[in-house]
Image 1 (cartoon, helix red, strand yellow):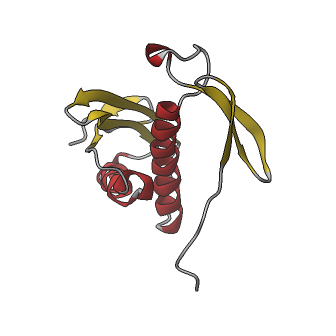
Image 2 (cartoon, helix red, strand yellow; image 1 turned 60 degrees about the horizontal axis):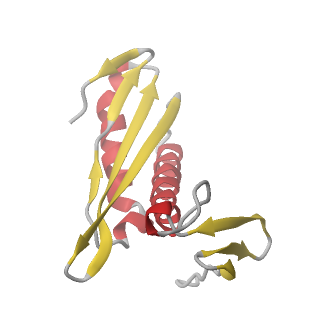
Length: 151
């Protein structure tokens, strides 16, 4: 089994601080810009959004794959993800990425297992593990329509 995988993305510059990201065989191409606070255009994806989206999509994929493999049923998983940029002596960098998953399950008996899977997904998300900044998990678990405390 090959233990190396490569993912290629091409980027083209269309004007200062703007361009398109393209991956062969994947639609659509994505218009991007530097963030407005760095003199980019508002309303476009930014490299910073791409990074946060990569963590979010990896967490969701990791959790749902683990849940499937362990026959854990859940009603829904919603995730808010927030990356915080901070300037230090070396320049701008991500200070942290906060994951706020909201997991809804059908049965009270599954709350501990659901909590364990959320934490396990955070530890096993390969994109998050590849970053130098801390990843902070702030989970919430719901049974039907009733919130349950998760630690």
